[in-house]
Image 1: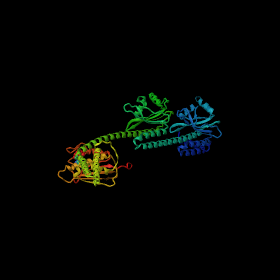
Image 2 (image 1 turned 90 degrees about the vertical axis):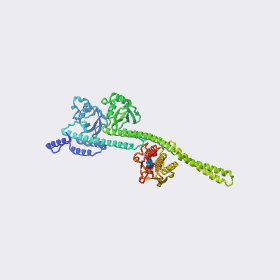
Image 3 (image 1 turned 90 degrees about the horizontal axis):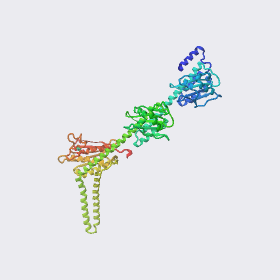
Image 4 (image 1 turned 120 degrees about the vertical axis):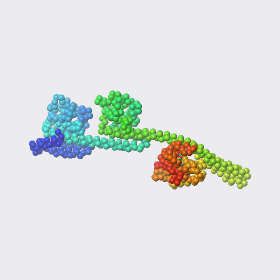
Length: 621
Ligand code: ADP
């Protein structure tokens, strides 16, 4: 019968008998109303103290000697006294003590049945153990009402008279049951609130750990995962939290990350056949829980038990980890010293946290593979760039010979002149000889600069990204292209914006891009029949907020039919001696720098090529 129907019944009785509902215990109903009003507004942390306080008024209003709340222990064989109030001057019983010796009562309470007697002698013969215990404790009359919390037997609420006999009338029992129901609801609400608080607290950990794993540098992911495992383990009072991978092929479990408290052994590889029950469950995407290895009801296979024992595991919660719908491993929480049960309500969150870890680790792995692939691509690109540079240098050999032979001829002439002046005698010639020697020095450094430039172009080098000035790179590239001699009949207009920001680049590769575009422009202009004007216009400036651009315009032949779509294809060339790798290499280099390159026809005739590079970020400056 529910509280309200009992109250109704009570009121109907009261109506038919007398005006006062329960004359024996004046003030009881008022006390009950006050009690339930007070209990209903409590925060979880206040509930225990409020129940303790309420017991005083209950004892008073019911005219009993003691009121005690006993919680059923998890093994179902004993109670623990969690709340007690004994009338002043009477002997009391200790709080938080396990209470044994009442097997018959426990069995009844477990079935949801009350135990009520005015004297222990009324108990049936099969309750002889309980009877003896009651006598020992001096409990003469008792009403013990099962307390139901959230549909489960939580324990019992005992109302006792110690050294006096108490008759338990129907009306009294109705009230006693009401008290039990109110307290049961209060405790249930407290449990729900506590559970919600726990879920919220775990959610907070989950969010914080997930946030800490976003955008971490590769090297920081592992310590962040281990730290997340620690936070989860500490919250759930686990002594060890481990992430496992299923090894491809063998299905063995390999520990990848673990947090464990002091003196708890590290986990090691577990062969699939050593954990048949657990690995089958995990592979099927199900949770496995073992709440104490000694418990015969635990559902693990005996192989599993031996393996877990070897791992030192007493109570274990194992959840599968899925990435992209595939079970890739597991997350386990276990204890090695104390046996414990794992809160089921937290399972989905533990699983989610495990998947946050697994995803972060998968991302770390993917990033590593991508970096390796990028490094490999950069190596290939540099090899190709090197070959292309060798080719350029080969093609430029005439220009280079000219660039070097010019200063050599000048050196020879200056040396001969100096010799003549020196031979003519010392008077007045000293200054002239010095002047000629200075000229020799200047010419030899000019030749030296050409040689150095050549060496840079011919040498292979590792990609070297650094902060560089784009205007300097353009200048140097033009000087290099000029060596070729092609530009000697070309009018070069260089228009550089002032205050250009730096870029992060490999200067040799970007020079190669510019030299290549300039050579193509020069080739296109050389291909024009007749002696038209050959203009090369180079613009360097800032594009939007984050890019610099280099634009190279020529007044050459422009693109032939259908050529524009194909010019960036490797080995596409319209030149008889062309290789067709120049532009594809330019694109690869520019894109590897985070920029873009494209070509288009120049409206007034000729072609325009333009590439961009990202401006160095604040931190790189
Ligand atoms: P190659 O110079 O060896 O042909 P590239 O990849 O540098 O190789 O160029 C591919 C093709 O793109 C050239 O053969 C030419 O047809 C076209 N091209 C490149 N630059 C220009 C330009 N400035 N004007 C017209 N066509 C060009």
